[in-house]
Structures are given as structure tokens and as C-alpha cells.
Length: 450
Ligand code: BGC
Image 1 (cartoon, rainbow, N blue to C red):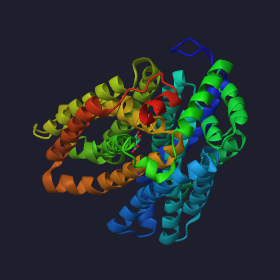
Image 2 (image 1 turned 90 degrees about the vertical axis):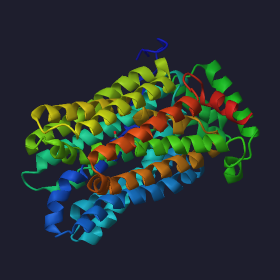
Image 3 (image 1 turned 120 degrees about the vertical axis):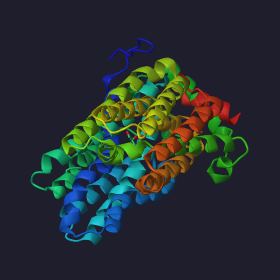
């Protein structure tokens, strides 16, 4: 396939790998998206209180955070590929447990397994794809992971709709087993990353994989030499991570991961129908239609990001995207002061779409891309763990507090808080996020450690 950035042809295998490993992203989107539709019915079957409903939803986030904390260490020691295989097994076990759960307790155990799987996949898949990618298309390929997340969310909405008439919450939760099994089988046949092989001192195996991923012989040699030089310059392990040279990068990654959540994305992804209903789209049909279009805009603008990320770079997309989020959120907050009318409902949908489009071109894909490409090979997994852990904890916190905040201080002020946080985020990006476009992972690493 001819690549759009440098008109070079890379083997189709390069794109197939990104899509198959991206199933980890699909499952992330599916399992976080599907629960809203399933909750309605399982709450009735198990006679759940609001607190127990919240437990069903948030167990996933807590366990994802726990897994994020450990999976970087596992990925550094066992390899990226085995870590994703482990995540696929956890997805399958979680899916089976949820679909067959005879009691709330077992349902929670199932959600915990899926949480562990998502936390692991959200670290290991971007890492795996980044380390396999040729530099010119790394943005494209890692952003494909985020595209799969957004597709997973939309498919989950669709499955919820399809099974609602038969109240089939077990189907909704259990169908995730299918992509999980495909992920497992695919990873049996996909290679380990060349960088991890180099870290293990196996340059010949690394060379073979690099060739399969479309690196020319001279690119392979240059990369192996550069990686070797970088590896010799470091000791690895935790002391290195908190070393004076790497500490700023570690903090920048953690802050970006935090901003991805505290600028409010999941208030929309999880609660869009409630928001639309509150602002006056009072027929459930209209609210649902609006929610589905939000999912569509998320997918569409992630495709825009994929197309642009290796052409214009990461920083411009982040700055433009967060700028759009500020406009959408600020206006959405203001709408609450208008008198009720049909126009108000339509404007609200428009504001939310501008916001989602901004997230989809910037913070959505680029957070994962940034975390997977800026850390040195010796500590890459562990360093990523810090960012991914913060991301899941913040996701948990925002999801848990949003409705309470709206009740306590009103929707307008709540959205303006997210607007203010987005303003902070844009300043943070302008002053602290380095550009990594078109550089090899080894060049990025050399700039960080030498
Ligand atoms: C975020 C998720 C979010 C999703 C929406 C991901 O990058 O980490 O929290 O739900 O994007 O597309």
C-alpha cells in the first residue's frame, strides 16, 4: 500500500498488524460503551440499588488502573506480545463470566477481569504498534488503535439497541468474547517487536522483524546501531526512571494522560443521553439519535487525525483539537442560560459535536501515541504504566463525580470547569509537549537521555 506521507510503499502486513492488535482497542471501546445499555436490564434482574449499579460500572475502571500499574513491568520483562496475549485471555474469561453470571458477585468478578484486560491492553497495544512501526507511519498506525476504540464504542451502542427488545444483557456483555478470541488467535501469529528483541540482545531476530515491517537494510542497520548506543547509555530500572534527565518527561506524559480525562471526554461518552435530555431533547428517540451521531463524529474525526498526524505533526493537532474542545464546552455551558426551545436542543448537539471532534483529532489519539513513543526502551513499559495508571484513575474519578457535580453546582458551571481545565491543557501542550513527528524512536530516545 502506498503511504500518503512519503509516497513510499510499505507491506500490507504493516497495516494488518495494526488492525489486528487494534482489536485490543476495539474491546476497550466496546466494554466501556456497552454497559450503559446493559445496566438497565441487569439492574432489574439483580434488583440493584444505585450504589450497586455504580459498582458494576466502576469496578472496570478500578481494575484497569491496577492492571495499568503492573502491565508495563510485565511488558518490559515478558515482551509486548505475551502481554497482549495475556490481556486477550483476561477478556475471554471476563466475557464468559459476565454472560453467565448467576449472581451480582460473579458479575463483578467478570467486570474485574475485563477491567484488568482493558488496563493491560491500553498500555500494551499502543506500545506494541509503536515499536513495530516505520517512523513515517507511526502516527497513522498508533492512531488506528484509537480509531478501534471509537469503533468499539459505536458497535456497543448498536449491540445495545439490537438486544434491548429481548432485554438481552447477557448477549450484550458476552459478545465481546468474539473479538477477544480473534485477538488471541492473531497474537499467536504476529511477531514480537524488534525493539524488545534488541533489549533482549537479539539483533538478528530484530532485523528479520524490521524487514517484514518494511524497513530497508540500511534503515535496519541504522536503527540497530542507534538502539544499541542508547541501551549502553542506560542502566534501566526504577532509579533511571526517576533520574533527573527522565523525570520531566515522565511528568509531562502523566499530565497529558491526566488532561485527556479531566477535560471531560467521558462525561459525554458515558452520559450523553442524560445531558441531551436535561437540556431539552426530551424525546428518548431524539436523545438516542443524538448520542449515536456523537459516536459517529468521534469515529469520523479520528480518521481525520489518522490522515493528518504524520503530515502536520502531533503538536498542531493537539493545539487545534483542544482549541475546538474549549469552544464546544464553553458554548455548551452558556446554553444552559437560554430559555427552553427546540433550537437550544439542536445547539447543544452541535456544541457536543464540536467538542468531540476536537477530542478525536487531538487528545484522543495523540495521548496514546505520545505515551508510546517518548520513553527510552529500557524503561518504556514502566514509564508508560505511570501515565496509563493516571489516565484510568482520572477516568474513574470524572465518571463518578460528574452527575453529583451537575446536581450540586449545575450543568453550566460543571462544563465551565472542564472548559477551564481545557484552557490549562492547551497552555500545557504549547509549552511542554515536544514534537516527535517523523523521528525514529531511537532519535527521540537519544534526545531524552544524552
Ligand atoms: C479515552 C477514553 C475515551 C475514548 C473515547 C480514549 O482515548 O482514553 O477514556 O472513552 O477515547 O473515544
